[in-house]
Image (cartoon, rainbow, N blue to C red; front, side):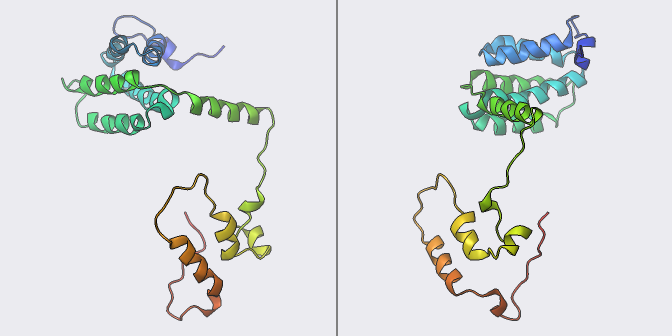
Length: 200
C-alpha cells in the first residue's frame, strides 16, 4: 500500500500529520467549527510546510465540500490565503486568516456534487470511456468545420447557443444577425483590422 508523505511526519504534539489533516477536513464537513480550528492550529504550530498544506486543503475544501452551497467561499478563502502571505510564519496575526477561512467553510451549506462528478469522469475514463466530437463543435473555428463550409452564419445560429439564456433587455443579437445577412469578409474595407487565426 502507498501512503501520503504526511503519514511519516509528526505534528508538534506527536500526532501523525496525515491524521490531523484528515481530522481537519472531517470537522469542517460536519460543521464542527471549534474542533476544525484546533486541528488547523495543530498543523500551523508544527511547521511552515504544514501551514501551506493546511491552506491547500482550505482552497480545495471550498470547491470539493462547499461547492454550490456557497459559491462565494472559494473567492473568500483565496483572498484570505493571499492576505496571509503578507505576514511572517510566526506573526501573531497569521492564525487569524486560517481561523476565519475555517469558519467560513465549516459554517457554510455543503455541496459535494462537483467532487462526485469529477470522480465519475475520472473512473469512467479509467474504464475506457472516450469523448465524442459534437457536430455543433465543427464550426468556423475548426479545420473540419471550415472544410464543411460553416462560417459566421452557422456559428451564430448553432455555435453561440447558450442554455439557460439570461433574460436580457437589449437587441444586440438581432442586430448582429442582420449584419451577418449582408456581411462579406472579402468586401471588408482596406484598413479593416485583421485578427490572428490562433488564440493562446
